Image (cartoon, rainbow, N blue to C red; front, top):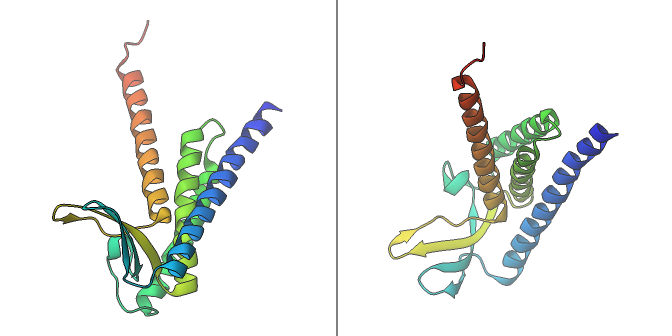
Length: 176
């Protein structure tokens, strides 16, 4: 009973976070598309944060961007589908007690799905969060991008924590 309950918890984490973040991502993009013309901006915090309406035909931060609907768009859809399948596979392999890892996969999956929906619907990704300080300007991004970054960050921290535990165990003296 305990193992089944733990297993259910892992899938609840996936369901709740993936659905919630996907819903938030798509809702915020819908509002931006409906209320803000393309390339328009609303200054929220002067000199620091704007809400903008831009489109990204490329990958993260616009790398490999090009014409909408070209071979690059098809490539990003295929890569997204492969990544989604890989994330689901890794999630299934996650042990029941690895809650942080389950959460990180859920975040990355929701972000990948959110941006894939945009690519299939618009042929590009809707970005709207725009941060800048003085002359430094971060490329615009969205909720899905944030979920992916947070998920990968949690994954990296979990891996570092595991490595530290293994390193500590291997350096401990063996009792004879």
